[in-house]
Length: 341
Ligand code: OGA
Ligand code: MN
Image: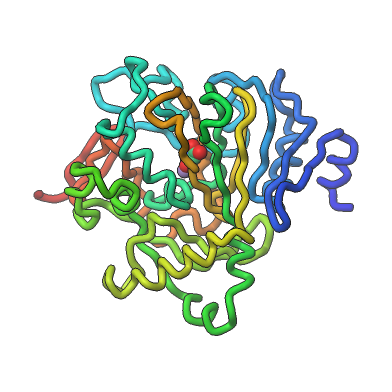
């Protein structure tokens, strides 16, 4: 037994697999008090193997959610997504992404609302923050208020390590050194073809981030296909040259045999996924426009040796309210011009 296996055997924490190649429910973690370091290690170990862990009924509140997430590394914050001058719906908890469907005044977003249109992009398989210079490691998504049962709102996952393993030798060789440019605005446009606002955005006018397509997933020693619908083009290729390859790889990795869906059961359920070895997507449903689905996400920045990809180590990030044109840098919550516009 490894050291963590011994730790786990004595802890009462167990993993129940949810799909043939990845994903598990983690049972036995007590979230009613601060989670000890030994449990953090057991969760890390489970994450390396399964990529997705589901914790039912944690009862965590915003403060507990942030404190738990911070035990796993540096957290991203939501500055690029918060409208300057408008109160944040989650108040002081700016480390939590508001991925729900309600505005600060409490109304459920409707088709014509930009937040609705932006959320549509989450229904495409993706990894969080690949469009930022430093990519995300773990995402920790918590159900604060779920829509009524039977109205949808599940979250699906795709195993990009197994999808890589199953590629034929020729494909592996063809893609082994490729680098992808990732763009938030590209996936937002793809997700909302009817949005006049999003269709008017040209991704090339905004910052993108570069990460290698084929990467070692350091915690497991396996190889991962680091791809998402954020992928705009291959470095050195035009968008048109890149599109067939990007789409073929995404289709390959999205096949049923590499995916499973989690249905959220109760408020307080928490799912952790590792963006450096799985993709995920919101599955939508009839709740949209009708019922509250209030989901909150803490995002742990990646600490692997390839966290920054081929990007400059700046704090510039993409978001609805970040001015991320190529001439600006987001520094300490301010938009700083780096050259004449
Ligand atoms: C996210 C996300 C999916 C969902 O929080 O990053 O993509 O089901 N969420 O809400
Ligand atoms: Mn996401």
